[in-house]
Image (cartoon, rainbow over all chains, first blue to last red):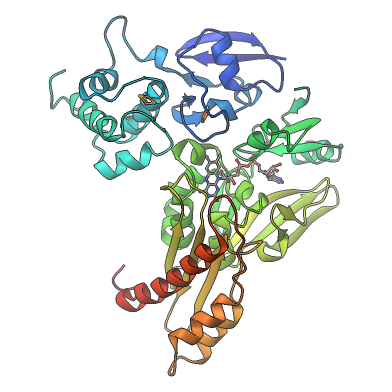
Length: 157
Length: 279
Ligand SMILES: Cc1cc2nc3c(=O)[nH]c(=O)nc-3n(C[C@@H](O)[C@@H](O)[C@H](O)COP(=O)(O)OP(=O)(O)OC[C@H]3O[C@@H](n4cnc5c(N)ncnc54)[C@H](O)[C@@H]3O)c2cc1C
Ligand code: FES
Ligand code: FES
């Protein structure tokens, strides 16, 4: 079957199998930031934004999001210039192997769009579906907090 | 994988697709897609609710509320009338999965999945919820406690689907939801205890300690009958009669029994300490 996806503002007409998962379709058309780990809705590395809200692409049929808008990390940086969340993750040591980072950034971005001044507790709750084997979470939570400060204009980049 | 994905726009279209062999409704897909991947479900037709008209509202019906089968857990958590009139449901839904899961998962799907650990089921049983079930033959109504027959087993038959869930407003009762899992939020519970309490009434329901969510009716009746000579140990003994846990990957039966017992004591303690003025 044929579907249309708007990915990071760009329209794609794609031929898919009705049983194909969004994760596989996104990777197939070149969005390689979208990553598979558990493949069973438990780790968050495949998180993308669907109409602005984080969802798990490994557990979503591409057919069921026909015509809708998807965002991935590819759409976050502006040329060479990183998004404040990306910048803060690097500065705070929030990335080691980096595998979890694209999913984490998308979840963090959705949080900050809704709440530009989240508390520590709110950050922890928002990120609880994004598992990281390396960092122990604290640097990542700090990074979201710092990115929020930058985005509020209280801290220089 | 070879199956067809259909997206009916009307209830008539939906019902006729459901009469086919091996057709499965797809709501948020947080249970169904995992099952398809594990080959526990091998569908011929997937019937998505995405383009269905209606059944996407949270309605105030006076002393009750109605939630359409397409309403997601995130939508319920953002709803003003839910936070005003169904705090027990709100408490239970906050415990489900992660934001990613809650943005897709529906309340109807959580009930239909009929897991003994289903967090919303505890809240729905406490709120005397019933389901409106549609089919080619019209509509039937069933209480959630009767609808769920065992782990993953319900009374839904081929050609039927859940249209909406109706439940009581419970503003006047003091709500508590205690869940013990292995890891925060993402974990399916090891045991959970939900309650609604007043001076003269207690409603209790337990998750993950029996083949379905269970209600300790004897204990609830004892509470109302013995207000003046209430004996906490007696109450807990009566409540524990419906606790028949199993050993599984998440916990041993012994551990579950101990956890529920402690959670029942905690429920009474929180109620005594706070009353509902303090909330
Ligand atoms: C990582 C993870 C963590 C989770 N944590 C929790 C937790 O802490 N607590 C908890 O209770 N649950 C938890 N869950 C399960 C929870 O996400 C689901 O039970 C969810 O609520 C199901 O809703 P859905 O819309 O995704 O259903 P789907 O997966 O779309 O459907 C579930 C079942 O119901 C059927 N169905 C759906 N809608 C209808 C309808 N209207 N009529 C007839 N049949 C229908 C489907 O055919 C399918 O059999 C978790 C799941 C995951 C993946
Ligand atoms: S790969 Fe999707 S949640 Fe793990
Ligand atoms: S940095 Fe390695 S998994 Fe998060």
